[in-house]
Image (cartoon, rainbow, N blue to C red; front, side):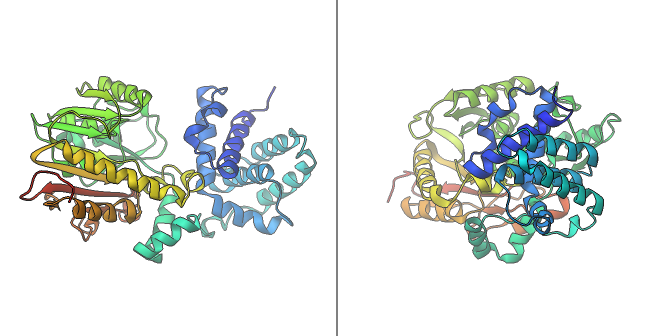
Length: 439
């Protein structure tokens, strides 16, 4: 019988091996977690994600204790154990014992179990007093150089500090006017250990451990999980009651539910049948209505629509704080292909608008090639297209304004509130010529 905690740690190390050796994202590694019970599955995923966020400090702690680089599996066992000891303040006996068992259990690494035992016992004995002063995990060189050129070295360092922290849990209320009431209800829950905070714009933010399905208002569909930044595109779109609105690339449905809650007649389109079913489940829980369509955004010919939200596929570089595997699973080789797809989607979406309609284009990317440059190219292709001014919205921070008239949200900008995902958002309208023709 496996010792307590070994199964989750073994799965976490396997996840780390796949991400760091084979560049596979965590979202594609469900087969590693399936044999575990739900609690161990959640623990393994949390351990792997936390270790990825803390790779920089873990490697800095281990470097003076290792004469030479061990095999990746052994290194990942050590990384995981150091993160548990120094970042999570776990009991040393269980951590060290499990790490030694994992290494001893593999034929190719069994001879290194003594090394693992010695290194971790030294960490345990000397303590982790300097852990907080170690450098945070740096972004990969290809991404870091691009972001530094765009935003400056100081901003990149600030982003890295935010991305090193465990992200908060953000909730979007179904009734925005009741956001303060929802925040107070969650803050007063005696069975919970988190802190509730009302963010500018109406997002309710929770810090600390929380089981989503056990939170007040989950069963009654009073809210859904949605990052603070991800809630802003629909606010910029300003859907109105009775309007015909298309949500392209809609799953898992946070933006669809925002649009539906505003009273609009929303069509939600997504390419994936599996993701579309998840969207339907969210709609059922919240009691909101939308027309869900499984199909390709480039061939969809419905409408015309008063307003369209295009949350385009992108590099997702703005979501590293929630998905710390992304820097290791993605590189810059696909950026050009993704940018070309985004341009085609913008062109097709504009054809689905009614005269005088509006399109909000957004990406959860920090790369201008997918944001500002993408919109500039669309303006050059389409006669009369313009970036419309962002409407005056409660909670909108002046520093989010992009030079082209859109919004540039960054992980570091509300650092005192726990950060947010990186997003670019632009509201596009035709001025004069409403043909939508490519020039």
